[in-house]
Image 1 (tube, rainbow, N blue to C red):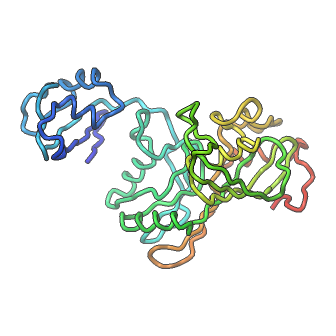
Image 2: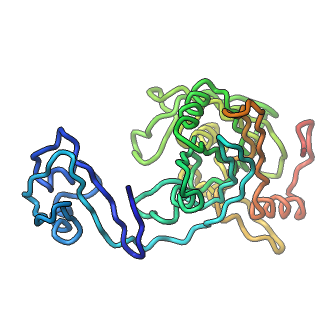
Length: 321
């Protein structure tokens, strides 16, 4: 169990049977892989303690089943939005509207300011589990299981593609076809290990799209995630020459900056990607759930500014809806 207490983070680390007798520094290196052995040795005397009170030294042997306590200062975290709206809930699931900028899980940079932490604060008596993921920079509909049994059910539902997810994205350039389907395998970019890319060795990935509105130099798309790979929409759209506006990872130049707006509207300051709609059958009631998250004000303001300053192109059959 992890407990946040004032400005200190406490983490319990249980020693599994296969690690019995290991040196403490070797065991911690295995459990905290991102930390160097030198760094681990430096914190043992200050932040690590054994349950029986014996001194903690790098060479101290660990015992199977015992719980080692790591107690360290909480990191100074960047500010993030900490409020989310509930779009739907029943006894099995919660559907929320996640704000852009809120990370989902704990990282080296975020501990308190994550969706997992907020769910724990708001629902302390429930075992909330996030059923799928959207990027920190992406806003919109997110599905959460209210217990582990429901989480397992939803994992299977996603695997058999019984959950429908539709996104909205403003992309650079004029997308020629009113509707289309992108089928290209996605895997780790061999040249940039922190990015994903279309690659022959990747996993099969499919994204469908429809043009929702056209602007001069930009296109607003509705996108259906048939599969759910990491950064799938961003990678697929960049691969066909239409990166998402405001994408600092997969965009370049104009697409990275986003459209120029005039008047009182603020320039685009985030990724223009929004999880708009989610549809599934409730695990508890069998009811059809169809939740929609409205486009955030800052994204709607960019579109309105583009319409007002005359950059909206004449609508074809796909037009505005």
